[in-house]
Length: 89
Image (cartoon, rainbow, N blue to C red; front, side, top):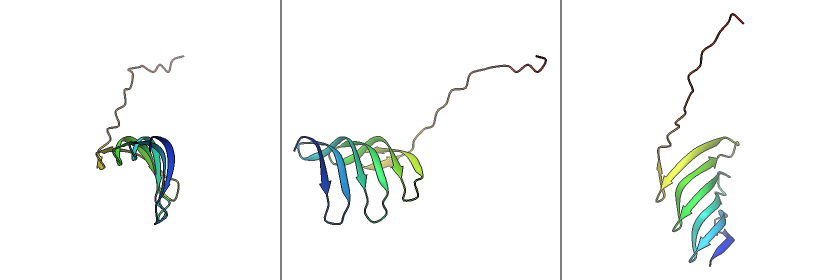
């Protein structure tokens, strides 16, 4: 199977997204039926791979990153410009 599709597992879990050679690939969403948690992000060879988000059953969203199906730390790098504050205006 190539392209986009929907896969429903016997346990009720659902994957919707890209497929390549019958495997989850590219952008896709996986919903766990037991918890209603949803991973939206990148896939490669049936494994979560790259950046995405994990939404729990309460709606809380966590930025997440996977490497070959294993979670890795996400760096939250922010750049702040230098500025000055004048209170004599």
